[in-house]
Image (cartoon, rainbow, N blue to C red):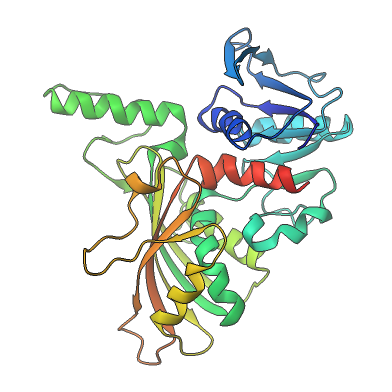
Length: 334
């Protein structure tokens, strides 16, 4: 992104604000930064490097002169405006689900498949946050001993539902502690001191919700392995912004926890948190606000007598590595 004209679509949302923060914290020298949002947000101010930038209304002329556009405003907006941005000469890095399953559009996690960035025809898709959290620490293992089967259970934070759901968690928790009633507005169920199946539609044919299907499909696409068997259960938990994942994976050949630990110790984008003596492992509170995927609880799956399966627990900031940071890393590599 060095010395480029950059636009952020959805600049007032939770991920949009993190786009701005990532660019600022990484010290990327831009030529210009344009902040775009809906008409109701137009005119608002947002700070960037000591200056106040004015939010502009997104429209068909927003991308004139833009080199790179970072999108995080929902799949509908991406489908409508990403082609307009590309036609205007911009490269789009899209954080929605709009283009992830399109075989012609690269789905990129820089630590895994950065080489795919060059295959773009104007649009690069940023993967699902739970998929990124799962796959970054799994990739080093897959490279040396291919993963044949993966079972994932996610513990997903409110941030995955945007700023409105984060606010609902805060308000409902405060009401609960004050002994007051809080009527849910963003999700169907009480959020404070509760957890529930991810609030996306269920496929009546498979029983999997949309979030689980995303993890399954995106894992196969990013690893470029349609033969890998994947199952996922995605749960929303009362945590503000970091996703956690429990996974058990079966490799092609027998594997020891010590081998996995050694691989993760030197893996890019991974921080080992595996202190058995103190029962200290990845936690959302430690993952929040930093860019690595924390990995630990590395142990044999005792239900697999072949010795080919390992269970681990990981956590990552959903708004950073799970969304904005991953997209900014892609844009940097452009």
